[in-house]
Image: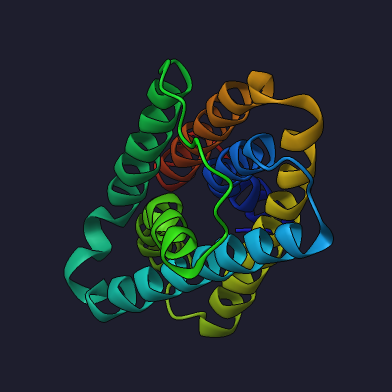
Length: 192
């Protein structure tokens, strides 16, 4: 996985966190830099932690799944992407309060990073044994999510909910395309 694909993966994974950050900004009457920092740290931290855990799990079971790893990556990223696209059409308002407390942020960070756990497993399949690259990828995902989440709080405060569904849809489409790319490369249909 090259830097471009990693960037696309990071942006795709961060869209759930971005959408929730937009909601938090919408619900917060006066956004302060500390609100942006809190959202960025929680979401970015968990978006880095979850793929790391997924990578460790995927690496531990690599010898059992090597023959089908490309299919696993394709299915996981496709399922995550499809779910994000489905959520983008939901009329539910995901957040209604401006609480940036520990319990609220912990639950939101976990909820928005579950897909990153599955992406970490897919990362292990793609980076077979290249731990240094995997750690850099995890850090990169965390930094991108931190940045987009912090910005999302401010954007939400300024623009409101009109960007939430577009962000989720875009993130879902990116993940589906990335999963398809991994599969097509492994099958020899696509060469990069």
